[in-house]
Image (cartoon, rainbow, N blue to C red; front, side, top):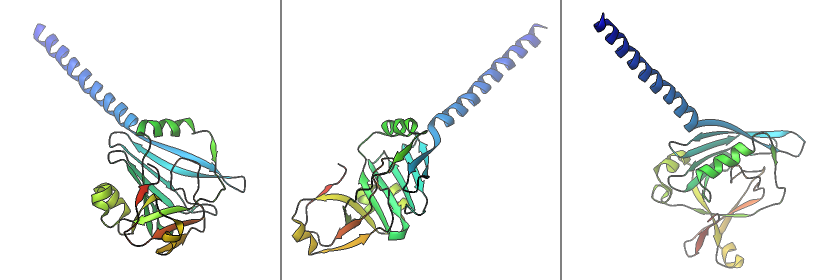
Length: 208
């Protein structure tokens, strides 16, 4: 009788451990991987929404805003392991890279704080300088390079040179619709991305 009771107690403890592990696993997955939606108030009075996936374990945030009357289709991956984010803009055949200036915890807090509010979008034009990246994997890492795929990679920068000199060796890409190159923040790049050619210009990261 004592042996049977001991066996039952042991089985009970094992079951408790297994159930605890299972519950912790569910909690861990729920905590580390989350789906969100952020919306933007557009000109016609409606909202345009962006799907966001947060993976705290991998320190990645992926967002996607679909093409509509106001926005270009843009898919963005923020990699907090490398400190860079890349935005794929298929319509412009470009993948635009920027520095991350916040922590993933700050970004998640921002997303959570704005789940019930449609963010206003700035209607001011903003010109952005984009420079071709010759060796993306070396500069931004393998994950973001794979995310960009086979389309050209550009980094968003400021420039320390006169506009006259820059204009002598550049081409321009003009977006037809609003492009969210800084995901989550209500600033829209609506005019021209300048892509200078040549390698004699001193560049500083735009969001650094």
